Image (cartoon, rainbow, N blue to C red):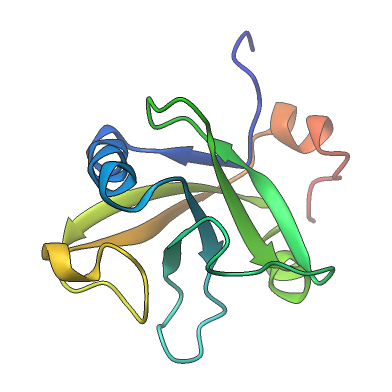
Length: 130
């Protein structure tokens, strides 16, 4: 595989919304919600508004065509369940959850997932599940 392997990606539609939101709010980051109040939604915040801690895992960054990539985090306990998946941030019509910055736009971010491929599993030091 010639492309860089990553646990996260972004669709062009989501990237376009991220460019608009970055112009309004400045640099952004994502934290994948654990499913309590907002389902399992990727929550988008201005950098510094949501503070990550030692219990959060940096899944990777997404390139939305901005000066800086956007970091994507998840809690360590949730990562244990999702470590075999690749996540793609997409956007659909609807209302975003909680304090996620896309809420007033009439669009909401969501996660599309797939199982990691054999090369990805190897890259991330994982063994295939039986």
